[in-house]
Image (cartoon, rainbow, N blue to C red; front, top):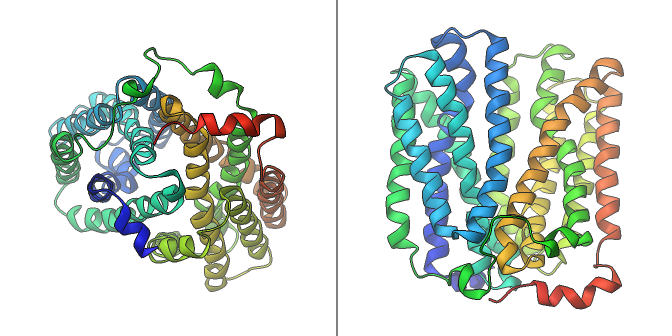
Length: 404
């Protein structure tokens, strides 16, 4: 693994550093957004829910638009647009006080920030040889998760002054990276248009006809439905059914993020020679095992064990599925494929709370955890059956890799 890291180009590490700081800047705000709207702006919880729904809808649209733009306009311009656009909105939020204007800006921000992810993922796939994509995406995940750990800690420390300082810092970080990126990342790769990229917005017929790729994404929705229970339904279970303080789940969330930072690269090294579909299937299986282990638990401390198991599954699944989609898509479709990947993850996360909440409300804890385990197990079984593309598609797959 160490030799793999040394082979990555300088632009890869520039992007790593940029994603780390940008993740810090983004996560400074998002844990406190509900508090800001409700306690500072005195917006009702019902309206807060509508704002967050609008922000979520904007994010879904943004990941698709970001993929389209990165393939037609370019990876780097799309990243810069996201960074500088997000910086402008964040800095504006630091100085405005009208609740309606703030709500509109929050939704707009939700439609700008996600433009970055598909372009950045496609950029990595452009500059890293395909055999090294799995460890490459694993390393990039370390940057994002380290930012998620550090951002809320810094935000909680600065929140004693005002929310304005959070928006100022978030916007400033994004602006610095946005202005520096064209110089630091310039010339690291050929523009997609120089290798035959499509010049009009739209999803190519080749991408939409790829049944193997669409099956991978469809199964990812199932896996994301299962994983989303950890962050959206398990906290409610701990507080409502086990009568634990709401703050206790923060320790489990911190465990998840810290384990990703500590073990992402070691576990990637362990699974280095696995086929991506095998690593994805094992990861989904660990989701199933982790949630099944939660079913009999009646106190807080034992939850650290299944959360560790689920985190191990996440460590294997997420970079593997990203690498598989990146290798599968043609160069001119790679950004759009990354947008679909993010959409699949977000779709599962959107449906998951409704599924899990219904199971918990009408069936109880055993239905929640066993049902979630079955959903994850179904995803794992599906990926096991998809270990290789259908015979009729294997010959075409090589031509879909795109030039390196």
